[in-house]
Length: 283
Image (cartoon, rainbow, N blue to C red; front, top):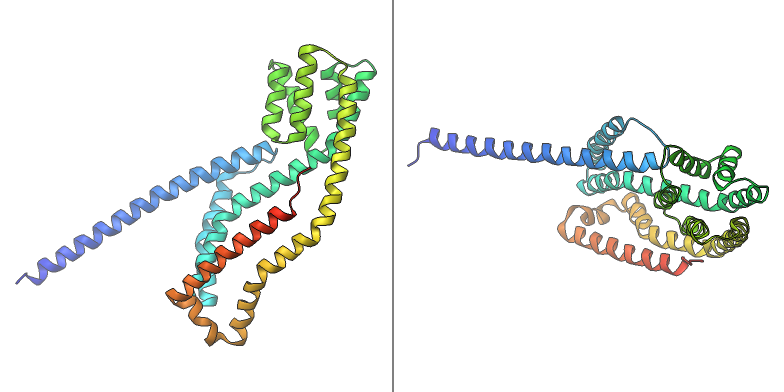
């Protein structure tokens, strides 16, 4: 027979080791998440000319990851909803950064035809390429002024015009900007009427923006139907949780119910992706 004190000592030692390993892994995981979060936020937000205290942003995010799932659990008394809240909070920063990037890129693409027309007019009046861009920057507002203004600043500190143009294309990641950069580089290498080239690009991109607007208007109904179809099962589950809570409870409290929910989520994602592919038309 093992002495009861020895057994308790072994149990205590095992629990202590388990707690130590858990805390150690949690600290390492927390540090990795903090570094990844701050690096991504700093890189993406600075590229969009948004400057914040990234440490404070991480603190708010970390507090939300801990507090909000607990609040959800206290109100719903279901681990499933708390887990969903945790997953949403983990994905929310990346989704927000992506939406900001898309919105900024769309704003640049909409303002680009007018900017090119303005640069073309300055070139026709005798201004140099750099001077024409600087005039456009001084008379414009918004993201396009910021990006081309950074291009001018890079040239002033000694970066080659070719490298500055390539940096512009790398920052924005837009097909329209790629066209402008490619046309500029070709004109600098082989010569040509850059003012006429920019004027033609301005007209082409203006027609492209108009066509994209028409396509978006025509496909908006399909996108709305996709959202309605995707959210309908969750709306039904929410309604049943108020009307027949006892009938819907096993879906959130049993392994079989969690399996059904996983299948529903997978099928919902597949349907949403298919609808998105159908209504997404590239010009």
